[in-house]
Structures are given as C-alpha cells and as structure tokens.
Amino acid sequence: MYQTKQKITLDFTKNHSIAELLGDRDKLIRLIENEYDVDIFVLGNDIEVKGKNKNVQKVIKLLNELTLQINLGQKMDIQKVSDSIKILEEKSVVKPHEIFSDFIIVNSGKKIKPRTEGQKHYMESIRDNTIIFGIGPAGTGKTYLALAMAVGALIKNDVARIILVKPVVEAGEKLGFLPGDIYDKINPYLRPLYDALYEMLDIETFQHYMDIGVIEVVPLAYMRGRTLNDSFIILDEAQNASPEQMKMFLTRLGFNSKIVITGDITQIDLPAEKKSGLIQVREILKDIPGIKFVYLTSKDVVRHSLVQKIVDAYKLYEESHRLEMQNNKIKKLSEEI
Figure 1 (tube, rainbow, N blue to C red):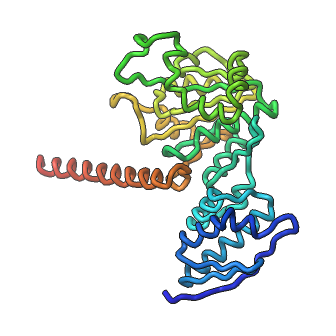
Figure 2: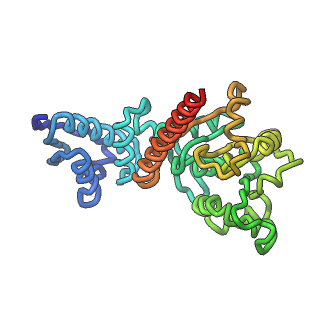
Figure 3: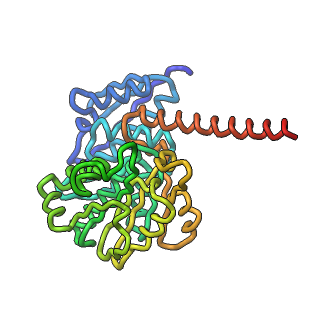
C-alpha cells in the first residue's frame, strides 16, 4: 500500500497538554510508531503521521481517542496506550475512554479499572445482579475484579464482610497428612486471593479484618449449614466444585448479599469420573432473573501478550483433538458395521 502523510491538530483543554500524550522522553509516541510502523512528527499541538495509508488512519483515530482520555483526566501511560490500541483493533462497541471511565476505589485509594470491553461488562453485571458467574481463561481478571468489587462494597458499607471460598482439590498428598490446622493446610491454595487483597487493603488492614472476621477465607467443604447475610461472597476456581457442592454453596445466599462465582472450565482438576458443578449449573440457572453468566475470552486476557496467544493455541489444539477423536469414533463404528 502506498505511503501517505496526514497532519492533525490535537485540541487539549487548558489543564492538559500534548506532553501527556508524548510521555517521558516521547516513549508513548515511540510505542505508537513501532506498533503501526509509521513516523510521527510533533510541532506544538500539530502532529504529522507518515506511513501506509491504512496505518496512518488508525494512528489518527488512536491519537484522537488518547487526546479525549487526557481531557477527561485519565492518566496516560504505556499500559493505557497499549490497551487502547488493543480495544480499537478489536473494533469493540465500547470506546476505550468509556471502558476506562469505570473504576473501583479500594482502601489504598488506588483506582482499579477494567481494561477490556468484556471486563467492563463483567463489572457492570456484578453491580446489577445478585449472583454472577464469571467464566473464562486465565488472566482475564475474573477473580481480581471480583475481589476489587468486594473491597469497594465493604469500604462503602454496602456489606459487612467478605467471604472467600475455594474448593480444595487434593493432588498427590492428602490434606490430612499436611502439618498444622485446616487453614495452614489450605493456605497454599488461597495464596492468590491473599496477594490481591494485600494490594487492595495493605497487609495490616487485611490481617486486622481477618482477625475480627470481616474477611473470612473458607474451604468450600466447610460452607454446609451456613446462611450468609450482608456479605459479598466469592467462590474462586469453581470449575473444581462438584454439582452437589455447587448447589450447597448457592443455597448459602442470605439477605443483602451478593455471590460471584469464578472459574475456567478448560482447567478442571477433578478426577475424570467426576462432573464439574460449574458446567452443569449453566444449564440449570441460565434463565433465572438476578443471575448472570458472563463469559470472558482470550480478548480479555490482561497478562503478558503471550498469555493470550497461549490460550488461543490451547483452544485450537483442544478443538482439533476433539474433532480427531470424533472422526476416529465414527471410523471405528463404520468398520464394525
């Protein structure tokens, strides 16, 4: 495609300037140049973009979007620019500045924001429903955003406590042979939850809330017989809950409480003969008002860019393997006939 160049004038409000768009030592503009293989020249608020016509048009669209974000007071950094590029390339219905305008303020004063259209939809679903299922691959923010919503609700006194629940799937060594009490035994399974809460609350506040019961961490098997009122309850790694455990857990819901259930149905650790309650529950509860199923995909992966490629590669392999097994079964039946 032929080379072209286009000049635009960016309009910043009086409180902002093009320096925010350029970044320290022009690193943000350099990022855009490398991403789209264009040359960008800056003179005052005038910017000239030179490169292949298609790429130039994309960069112009991106620069206008980033300028709008700056004028809205949204912080500009490498992550924000990279996320904006990803959202625009995927042609999301919701614009980047609309996604980034949603946020939760946690105890540290930090703003936790969605980074994809799917994550924004997930957060909105948590606000608007009583029971929410967040289903998707690793790295999509299922648990992290649910924890952030829980901490936000606790800070605003919308709930009195946070209950974190996780199935414990024994692998190799039986829990009974591990040293310590039940919490010492399951602590390795709960470490990802602790790490996120340390970030949102700081270690001292988290430990204080644990000591007085405002935050409670419970193995799924210990939930039987309880009714949880005024609570934000999160069941993590729900793909490892049996159908019986899933039913038991869902019926713990009390008044003024919210349940978020997260899981990845491609990473089930249950024995082969056991069914996943997360897979079964989708058919049972799919049409009940107040219950929402949100499906996140590889597009919502916000870890290293390779994680998205890994997720897609495994999905392609599994689909190919499943098709091969079906064909082999058909071939075998044909031979028997």
